[in-house]
Image (tube, rainbow, N blue to C red; front, side):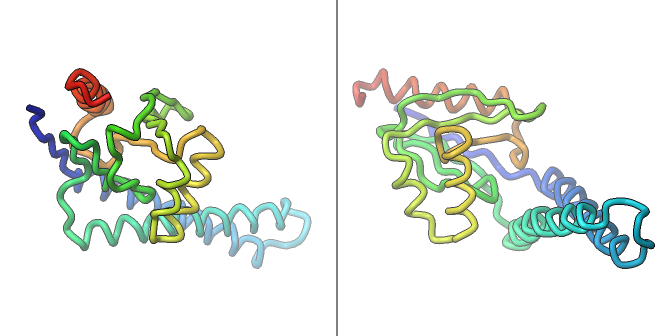
Length: 181
């Protein structure tokens, strides 16, 4: 029998990421305003303006997601049980991921950030079932870049990456041992 594991969201990590996102939104506004106020020829105004807009849009969406997550007062970020994993930990949270769909688990590192990539039999189905357009687009981009739409990280969870990895691997191993695969 597999004991269900619930990993709470870390409010302190969410607040820190929110503050970082708001700082990048502020930098984006500063870059946009420098385009308007600086005399021509000081620096590449168009590049500055585009970087400012990109920063405001990208980090603005992250900030909105985090504010919603904080005000919804959601407590659980990830559940691991006999059926699989329920992901509610990020802006592109996958929802229910069934063990029976899982083919492989791999650790990815982007910059210095580690993620658990979950390769599934039916990646397009996981993307299509998302009702939120931004989540669907984010998962689609993940699929194109990494070969799977589903990545798990510990950034917003109360556990560290190694603990998360161990729990996911143990759950998948238990599923395979139980004769279901």
